[in-house]
Image (cartoon, rainbow, N blue to C red; front, side):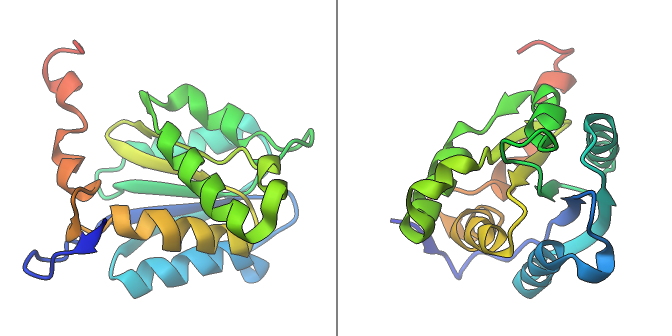
Length: 183
């Protein structure tokens, strides 16, 4: 089972949070606030935060820009993962993924199933890596953000988490680029 190795140092990472919504602002963004509070409580750095409309081009543009920012190691989006016509976040971001994180979706749904049952299938939560940056695409509810952060992301962004974590492989995420694009 997983554990925290207290003999290892905590290494804070830079995180950006994007809320996808046609109706929310930073003043009433409960899901974004939930993530920001957890990011700061864990000791990480909130590098950027924004709201994007439910528009593929706007979502992709913002996230792609953040993946090119050397201060940002992780992008977390909230909103736009359902099945309505306005829910386009996976379509906007999955084309950016150099590597998909299928296990994130599977574990997220397992955690969610314990809380909301079969309603979890109404989320298309996903994750991947683009430009050596981890991207997590979460549903828009504060509960879903709590579940994803508390049950998965927090541990994987803790260098002390054993037997493995994302922080220890961050320096190697762009190996294919350093080898001339092979890989």
